[in-house]
Length: 181
Image (cartoon, rainbow, N blue to C red):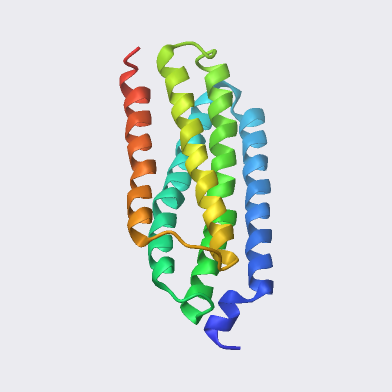
């Protein structure tokens, strides 16, 4: 089997999905272990893991539109288009979706445990994370659209959409660090 065929096979996709679920299980086991073994510093550990999840999620949100730009230029059904479909599916399912879920889970835990849902900056941050999640959903729909060889948006559109996660990230970081209100 050629390398390209191996990368786009259904079996390879299932293995990647299985590895993602296994990684999520290991992550949950780590959280339980930290809760039991490090109760005094548990919130600091959760903050660190939250930041790691955010970085992973943002990496996917920043990379996905770049894939869409190149995929928009590939002829539907071409080998290049099929390769982009696999890349987009795996990025979404193996990195972005788990990272988003972990980000939300740990973020809500921290908002409750550390901040008691107090502070205007926290409410504004959560609102911006909701918008970031909307961008994630739009990217997920685009992945499905590309997978079905449906209508495509222009590379210019995806270049502009590439800015949305960046602008939201900048605003969120400022809210978290500066806490202006």
